[in-house]
Length: 430
View (cartoon, rainbow, N blue to C red):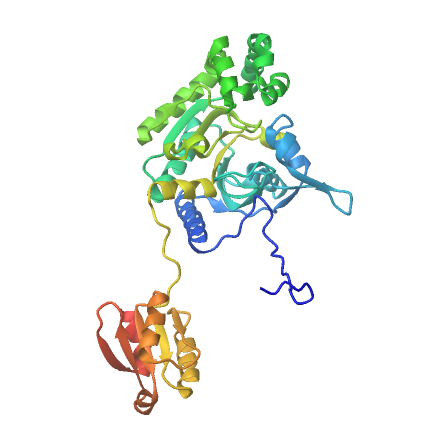
């Protein structure tokens, strides 16, 4: 082996940033399928797609998501640009959609205004299976009505999406986080009962005990859960107002009428501060500790935090990456990638341009690929099979003289000769 430094050239490979990844092949096929299925489900319910910028002013999330949330405290990619503006790579979708809702005066539309989005989000988290620093979400928002039926419809649409993808082993968890007054009472109660156990809590939960004790219920730390059990913490439901309880009962009743199965979870706490009343999550038991595929809830008043009028709203988001893991866990394959219907094989040099002209005449109504140098029939067939083509077409001296193309069906093995001008109609008829 030659190790002479003067003759050895090193080419360091630049890799994707940790916590991000390139999407292609099967993974991209899954992602596109999920997004397309969401579009079909949500547009059938009257939702319109919206695209918001990846970059937002920092206050959109500091005010919208809430200063006590982990997203704002620890996970946002925030920076100051050359103009001195504090900008953020969006960590979630709802706050940005509500900013756009207000900026473009969408409140004049008939309520509820239904919007859905898809795209990348960014959080400075520790990368692990199904959790990335650049991740992808599909989300839905319904703004303008506070009726429980709107909550139930949003939840049903999330379930419809899971079913449209063929998932069967998912579980819908349902709960309520009450109104802000209810949570203030409950947070005061939690501080009282948990303060004697403060030193046994994790570092994160000790911080939450001061800022937002309710978030301790969502802790994944086993020691925190043992403290909650030891302290005999009462459920939030015991502290709800009658109005909040009635809203929750109405949502459950509507879901039962819709035939949507759910499990009640009195400790269900969403990770963002803007939620009120209804809260829900979709879990998949095959994913272990990272079982949540997505979730959402009601966020009445979020628009007021962003400087607009106080409007009711409800919505959800699912993590595309997590849903892909669930699809794989249930052995649901990604849709096949693009494949040509016909693969053209030139048998001599003159036929190369003929094949190119013929391919272009059939596109884009038919997917056609070709070899760019002459091939023998056997090699051309093998190439066509590798590309997933159904038919292979041969162009050579004989076909040129007769103005035809020899077409072979790679499934049945049948071969026939067709006039070139009839090839397109023949393939379309198939």
